[in-house]
Image (cartoon, rainbow, N blue to C red; front, side, top):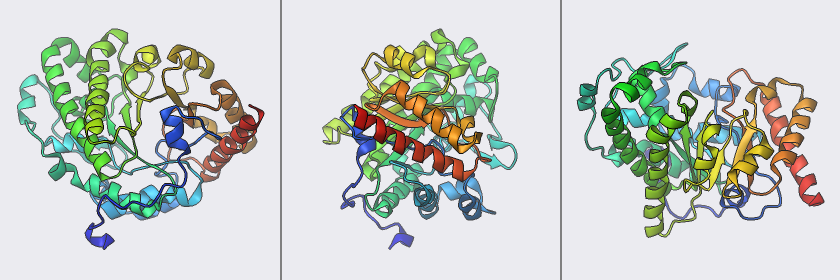
Length: 369
């Protein structure tokens, strides 16, 4: 049955560990939940073995492969949530752009958007079920295969972050080509951002219908914008996504699906992000936990924010840093995570040490409370 993707998005196994969802919704928890961005990834030898010789986006289009890669880290570590294995660039693909994963280089757009007239190359309407149905099938299959152990997180890239890739043609340190559009072609930039927002809303709703129990929006390139540009070209679209998704979910009686916004290096916008209808704000490692709590003003739960490179430290040191982080954030309305994704050269044992330190220290702190 699995092979034919005939598993339906209903009759899911009962959830056994809801700590992550409770923390995300701001409910009381008896421990601090923990998961890692990029927890399904190249730091695991079994991931490298599964992926060997296969095209990256071909893997993304296989529900069985995505399910297996999502489950791999959970077999090793007692994470409190799973995040579906996929990629943010499936959205530009749905709009008709060619994206390739080039070994040693990363994601590459052979024909990036160069001028506003290039927007005419994009599909004006996107049948999200037809173009991204493979992600929905992967989510449904994974929900069943998780057997209720932990919740499953769906995700998307945010409009500005996706726009940068579509114009830069790949990764960039400066995002100068994309930012050139903001300064020289503001109207065309907004047109593209609106188009991306519309697809993202449908995409996230499809993920929930398929079985996703929480959603994360990755604004990975927030740090390339200053406050003024963020307020014009990023924040309004992040807010629209949260508002529209929530409105539709409420209509469908699914208004208990928490949403997380992660704007890397966007700490200048923390107050605004805390008032953008997301239940959780993810934080990178460049902000102090207590300062973040104060600035968020108790309006949201917080997620993060250990420096990923801290996992290169000896295990005892990882434990000390985790303890400091937990003491800084407190044990309520908090989800432990790294301040960005795991890197490919990280030792799985050190990832395990991070997860174990969160669980052991949070239990102690909760008992002291």
